[in-house]
Length: 128
Image: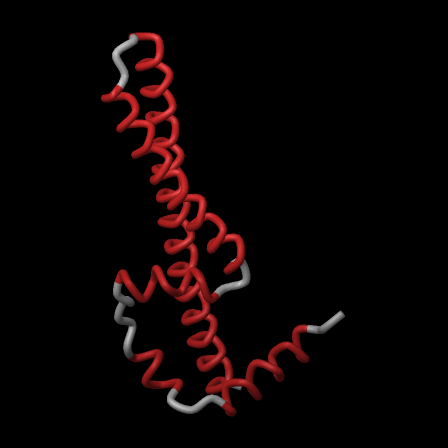
C-alpha cells in the first residue's frame, strides 16, 4: 500500500517530467463536440462504446424499417405492432444517445478533476 509521502513524491516526479504543463493549466478551454465524441472511443470502455454505437445504428435502421412497414400496412392490428416496434426502437436509440452524452460529460468532469489535481500538486511543490 502506498503512503501519502510516496504518492506525493510520485506526483512531483511526474510533474517534473511533463513539458508544457503551465500552458496546459493556463488554457482551460473546452474541447469541441467532435473531439469529445471521438474521445469516447479512446477510453477504457472503447469496446463497449463501439458496441453501443453499432447497436444504435442497427436500432435506427430497424426503426426506419418498422416505420416503412407501418405506413404500408392496411390492417390496424399489424399497424399497431409495427408502430410499437418503431416507437420502442426509437426510444432505445434515444437512450443510447443519452448514454453517450453522459459518457462525454464524465470525461469532461474527469479532465477538470485532473487539472485541479495538477494545480494542487504544483502549489504543494512550491510550498514544500
